[in-house]
Length: 74
Image (cartoon, rainbow, N blue to C red):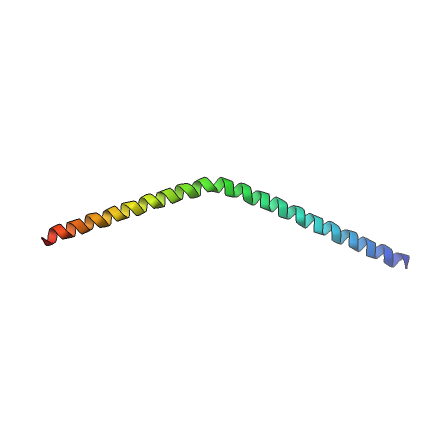
C-alpha cells in the first residue's frame, strides 16, 4: 500500500513538473516571437513603402502609354 502511494505521488510530481516546464517554454516562445516581430516591423514597413512606390510608378507608366497610344492614333 505504501509503495503504491509513493509511486502515485512520484508520478503526480513528475506530471506537475512537466506542466510547469511547458508553461515556461510557451512564455519564452511568446517573448522570442515578440522580439522577432519588433525586429521585422521596420523591414515590413519599408517593403510596404517600396510596393506603394512601385504601384505609383506602374500607374504613371500606364498613363504615359495611354497618352502615347492616343497621340499615335491622332
